[in-house]
Length: 166
Image 1 (cartoon, rainbow, N blue to C red):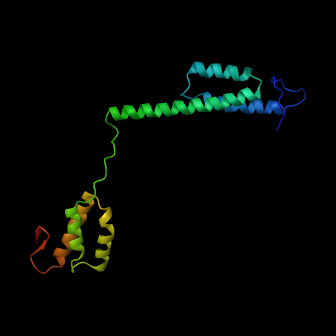
Image 2 (cartoon, rainbow, N blue to C red):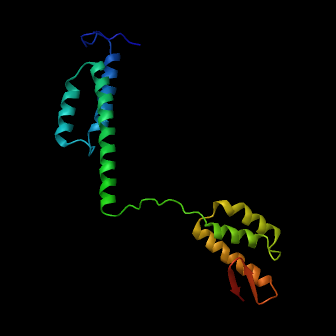
């Protein structure tokens, strides 16, 4: 794009390298200054060194390194804060999903085939059956039992080994 001499000297009468120097300086200082990831001493040294450097290549490399270091420090800080939260018991570790038991699935299937349920209820039950967790299956079983009891003229009914009284 622009010819930059190897020794880093700026050609007389051109302000293009100066534009790049200013851009690099601003970008480096934007990452470092007022950033809690860098100590005040690092911020001061960076500010001084950035303004003394006149080589765009060095500043470009410095910008890349400053961004990398900031990213690494941020990652370390997040890992440390997560580890502390786990140690203090503030983070809940996800437990494996416990799907409906075979007995619950059998009972749901039997209830879905009951003539008291509508076709929509039967279809919904059969479609959701593989995805039910234990607690969802227990809740849904209670709803289906209530619907069957409401529509049954008898006082009691039996599904599998479960007997419910109206």
